[in-house]
Image (cartoon, rainbow, N blue to C red):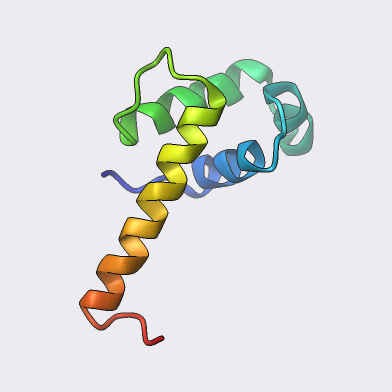
Length: 80
């Protein structure tokens, strides 16, 4: 999985909290089209279908974050 940029990470965290594209755009002071571009990039990086809805995208993201944490624990990068 490719790493998300800081802005992409912020966008998906907002999506996780239930914010819609319009609300994210207002929060960031950018256009909805730019938010859509970030979402498309996130889908590509997470290898999620472009037709996937917001719920599925967030679920895949959460799973990938959990997997990364588990891998870091196994590699001794995170101490429990």
